[in-house]
Amino acid sequence: MRVAMIGAGYVGLVSGACFAEFGVDVCVVDTEVSKVEALRAGRIPIYEPGLDRLVEENARDGRLSFTTDLAEAITGADAVFLAVGTPSRRGDGHADLSYVFAAAEQVARAAKGPLVLVTKSTVPVGTGRKIKEILRKVRPDLEIDVASNPEFLREGNAIGDFMRPDRVVIGAESERAFAVLRRLYRPLYLIETPIVQTGLETAELIKYAANAFLAVKITFINQMADLCEKAGADVHDVARGMGLDGRIGRKFLHAGPGYGGSCFPKDTLALARTAQELGAPVTIVEQTIAANDARKEAMAARVIAALGGAAQGKTVAVLGLTFKPETDDMRDAPSLVVVPRLAEAGATIRTYDPQPGHARQMMPAGVHFADTALGAVEGADAVVLLTEWNEFRALSPQKIKAAMKGDVVLDLRNAWDPASFREAGLTYQSIGRQ
Ligand code: UDX
Image (cartoon, rainbow, N blue to C red):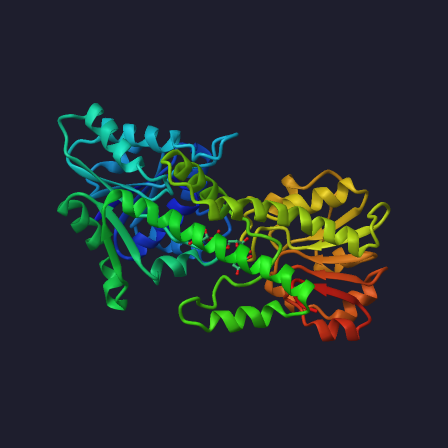
């Protein structure tokens, strides 16, 4: 089989490389010449564990290629995937669909025969129908089926999520489209992956419903953590006690500084806007968005409070800047709120992140980037653990204490053992625990 993947961003690259690994011929298209040249030379523009090896091997074996020429890429393709960006439109939170529509139109113009056009980008409910209209207008002569096949890839674990998904969702309106997509995912039949076959609108909504539900779940446990602190309870045990109920489940009940990333913030906002427009507001998601935004601000206030109410002249070490571990992605990371607020309050900020590439461009001027975690901690009045990279878990509290000037530690991910930090003479605070 042969597919074209339009967009060499996170989703397009991972999906393209994984389909190639399934034995499919994949051509990935991007308009950015430098990106395509880099990929051809084996350089991967993002950090995702295992992706470099997958791209290298499949490119070497001739199943994965990169081009800027969309017409060449879609020639002979059984399916063309749209994996272009759908950022939040400035101001109103709606997903910006201009890249999706432009790509669909280009595919229609360049198509030489019937094909299946599949949206992998997260697009609001109703987008597939609009794409159908565009195709009909541009190429009334041609049969182009439209399908929706949303991705559920977690950054840092994207290849595993693609190769061993909980489910594959296929929304379409023709047997041909279903058949092409089922054939593409055939390797997953061996591991009995459930395939949800449904309509276009339903598939589009499943993606938003899943992400919004997870965002609500995280926000719920975050608010429970605040309540635990007031009530003298332990959020860790509350999460475990709740999560063992099979109806609830243990995952995504980890209290923290608020969710970030490329999906939850943007998708919750887009879902809330779409739902308002369609006259069926999802107020629980609206509340979640507001609570999560407020939480990031509250984290900065918490650090200042732990410093005795003033950050002026104090040195704060921030460990972890990316929105979660095993990624270099900074989109909507809590650090983008916490660090600027501390800097505005007069603190000197020392940071360390194992993947600081993007963070370097996004932190306020004057923020110091250390080469090691202990290097960042050097001379600090307070240490804030903001992203739970594995290497931080192994840090010795004695060494932290010895490197610091002060003794305040705020573990905003509950990654450290409170007793051993206190034994080392540190004033240790975490989230939702005593
Ligand atoms: C998410 C979805 O999981 C994925 O299915 C979708 O396709 C894209 O969005 P991702 O953004 O990569 O994936 O990260 P995820 O692991 O889901 O974490 C999102 C945010 O929630 C992170 O900031 C993380 O720190 C936070 N989080 C997650 C918590 O605070 N607590 C949890 O229990 C889980």
